[in-house]
Image (cartoon, rainbow, N blue to C red):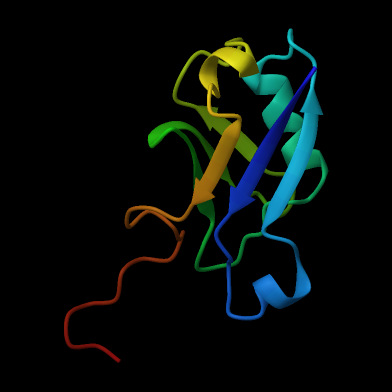
Length: 116
């Protein structure tokens, strides 16, 4: 059994005041990344908004999972490495960091140049 720390960026200015930005989870040695991410999603740790709907999980600076907000059916993960990879293999530093990255954070189209 090992302890994994999960961190996330705040989704809005008050998010860090209301919700924790860190989570510590005990992980059995045989747990897969898929099972681990399902537990994170199940704890409602990741927060989303209309302008931030996809968050990426990094292990040692490498993206390994994206979680897409689905406000009607639950959030859905997109694995960037095989989902059956053991947690202790893909998180050697015992840290999974969720960050907002890229321009694909929102389902809303980018505003036209010069628009308000």
